[in-house]
Length: 456
Image 1 (cartoon, one colour):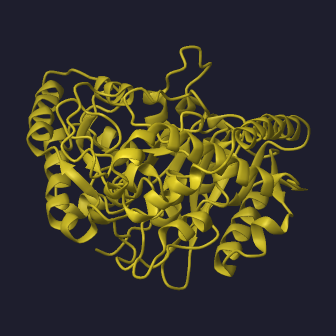
Image 2 (spheres, rainbow, N blue to C red):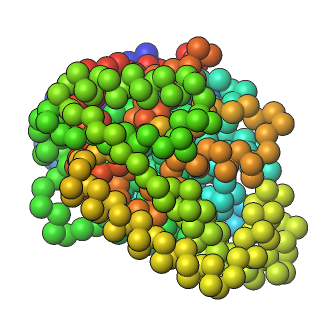
């Protein structure tokens, strides 16, 4: 196949074409690898490319198709994983100087599940150092560049995964999300990206940022593709039905909660506000009812989630911070040093506020709404030049961090572009992954934002 065929291909479409014999896994993987070779020097999406193993596995997958075998729902599909997730025999650097030569001995649980479903792991993607930031402006490996405008940040910390999928160097990717690290790059790169509910997807074999808030989540162009990936990654043995089985269920009559709090709108870029408001209007036209709500705890919850996250990070990195602080990038070192200051009572109070927040949202979803809608980020992708990563991180994670502490699934969905051609994301939060994916899928059936591709 050629690159023009690849660019508009979704995971679901590729699966169908492989099963029908119209393309082979080897053709698909070779085309992705050629695109990586062509674009990675410009975009810096991948820290390592698994060329030999990907070609070998794709050859085996193609032979299996010829024998009539089906290895699983992702048979022959090229997937990338963030370089904080272990793949046996490959480096896991976490985007750091400390782990530049660290080679994983085993696959992470999520990589095992991808391989068991027939996926081809094509490479390890770039990230903010130790996932501790939201820009993927990395002093050790350079910045990941947004394919919609290479002068701009891809977001983070899963910026390389966002760039890799957005530029169609792979068909899907895994990121990790602690405070918004799947949702932010998905929004800034024009993708659909899911932070699953806590414990829905295993974090075994993933270098931690925060033991309390870490998750692993899939990124793709469509909610349908994200549902395919989530069903493969699902670590809950008693899940009643797959997300994919339920994704076409009707959404008319569902209640959409839209916060009226100034927190979400007053200091948000007017083009972001306009795109999200227009998306809410489209959902209303589709038969969903709009409910005005308030989230009076939101400012305190944002602060509490940040305290918990950085305290966990300091605990994990305390030995490195004590012995060799100069080996951290300046922004990450600053965050860790500042994060050492909150006291044990502040940490305990933050954990308690998290419990109160989850009770509040539980009541809200039970009594008044089915899905919550807000912007994913307050701004579109910021410029890389002159960026102050610590301050930018506070801005970009403002709307995602509080919902990490909710432990509920949250999904970023493309909902428009700015006048400069930068993507805008809408965030959906609900008690189940099935609900956010259903609403996103219905929205995408009635809109075309997810079909746009950067001109590279």
